[in-house]
Amino acid sequence: MIKKLLGTMSVRIFLITVIGILITAMVVNMLGQRDSRENETRLRDQFAFDRIESMIRILEATVPEKRSEIQDVFKRMGSHVTLGVEPPQNAPLLPAELANLNNLLVPEVADFISLSKASHCAPRRPPPPPGFGAPPPHPHGQCLAVYTHLEDNTPILIELHYGGHRPPAGPPHERNPLTIVLAFFGLISIIWAVASVATQPLRKLANAALQLAHNIEHAPLAENEGSTEVRHAAKAFNEMQRSILKHIQERGFILGAIAHDLQTPLTRLRLRLEKVKDQELKQGLIKDLTATQEMVREGLDFARLCGENIHKSKVDLTALATAVCDDFEDAGHAIASSLPAQSITILGSAHLLTRCLTNLLNNATTYAKTPALSLHTEGNQVIFVISDDGPGIPAQELNNVLEPFRRLEDSRSRQTGGTGLGLAIARMIVEKHGGKLSISNKPLPASGLVIRITLPLQ
Image 1: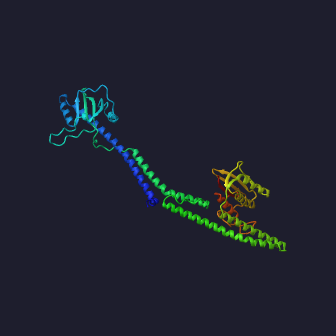
Image 2: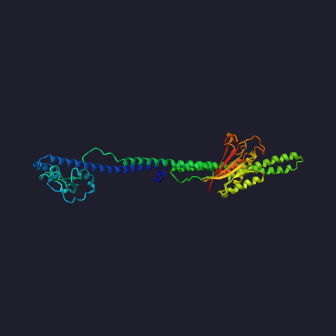
Image 3: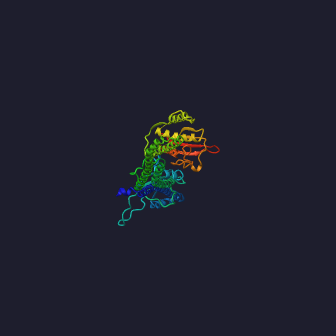
């Protein structure tokens, strides 16, 4: 039950927020306590400075004969003043806690200061008479000894209690900016952590959808990771991917079945055409039958690509492109090639990639006179560029021409419109290799088509 509860995203975000706020509050509280201690020390030192300075000024304003009376008053106030005490020759080592007070007193008010036990100071209040309450508590803190001299050069020793009680109230000291900065960054960290937890599954799902758009056979999402909502979303996404893939495969199977079933009657028809005596009619019928068989063959190829996973191995694209260009030159079609001297190797199917380049260059040689093929790398990608100087494609048809059975001409002649599967097969081959095929026209005033194939470099 607890594991299931902790698996939900809402509980995780709640816990992260609460824990982050608690940690931030603890850090701010620790820093606040440190500031408070520093402020207390500062106020205590200022209070001691004001008190010592007042005592010295009172003694200086009092005639020497009356100073003993003033000493009694100071004693009843918890301070002990001794006149005529010479300071020691060697000043004791100053404790670190008196550094701030030493800066305030020496040398403007005192010659030097030191600390001793609290019992060395006069009690803060005299003991009560017998039977009137408990004796005063054991003194806390320490005894501060201040050696100085009056204006008439009379040396004095002032002993008063230091520490062991809170200083009087004073103006609040400005809070340490570090506390405010840490609190601010603590809250920012909490907000960032909550935002990351909330958006990470969405980013993961968006990346998977983007990969799915380029490759329907991309690896499915892990269904046993993340919160309950994330696992449900991953299962739904994988189910959608399987449904789309199944639909595409079924479409390919239907097309393949139809094309396969047409093979037998077309073969019988070809045999019967041999019995036609009219040669002109016979040649026309054979030509139409050949075009039909070609359509069936391309339909079968397209169906196979829809329903099968390709076997990949190392393919030298430089050597493959060189061989394709040589085949076209042997057939009387010169290809202006720009290929790198070094080998460019990827994982793929040499047969399918050859078929892809052949289909695209066939289109280029059909509609243009100077087709060109180039190959280069950009970062971790391999780029094929096939261009020509033909009439190009209307801008409104650039996105549709890669769809199956899409022809730009109304004629069904094999010399003009073709079957409409050549570009679709080329695009599917590229996508099977994890790449992308795009088509664009050359910028005006030039005319012609530019086909760009991007493949991952592995």
